[in-house]
Image (tube, rainbow, N blue to C red):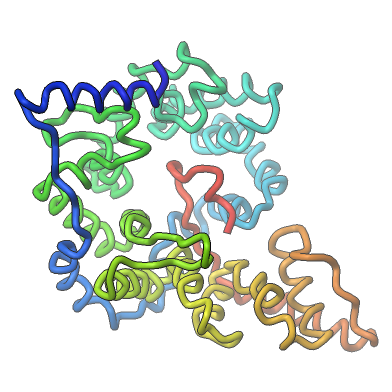
Length: 373
């Protein structure tokens, strides 16, 4: 039975049993969340961290740091080369990331990716087990039901429970989304379309939000961004975000500001998008995005502010974007007229890159379509 038939069957079951048991008729109101968030906002809205890596998944010196930075910049060819030596040594993390990078690149890569996931899982990597469960990204499509099993999902939960007890915030967030209050596993459709604990009742929602706040207090901001995404509504006719109320808009801006103050790139990107009608080319958000090696600030120089750029500016930002991503945003800009100017600008590009402090926001749960900055 397809996902949609299952959802239709569930709806019919609710209709036919409403007289006996009733359906869950709780309708969340985001404005009710404000009171829960307010103490957290009041305590953190004016705090700014000097640590550029405070919200980074991994930090300089970690074996995966440079690799994940390249993945975020779309330099997958470079990341693959960096991963290969680690994969050959049997490193479970490298096996996982290598498999995640190649599993859907071609038919020929499906079997090698499957074997790498299995090798990583055999070493106790819960992320690899997750990718070999019915919830894994593309697992059922690429690897089939015989490889994407409930047994693997059971193993995932077991391993993440162990990590959660050791204080692993990502493991705790996974279990918050995966398990109902009674400890049972949520349905497959619910995980991807409607977070059970977030929408089931006022009590489960309050607990969920309190956990999101706790994660953010420990500088793990992905749960906070996932919450913000439930409030943001894109009006495609106007190509802008709209809000149900001024209170909801204020809540989103304040939560994003806290993420920005703690150098979290996704929060910076989202806030830039929300401020697109008023933002200037020298805005502090754009400067912070660039300092953290975000490429959006460079792209916007051409998309929004190109008329403000001189020929040398265009060369500088074009080559800077190429240095980070391996390709030009639009096309190669004309080189400076003199060798001295070119040498000066090339040095400026090199100095700018060396002064960056790239933060990493992706982790083992991040889907491929959200990898690249």
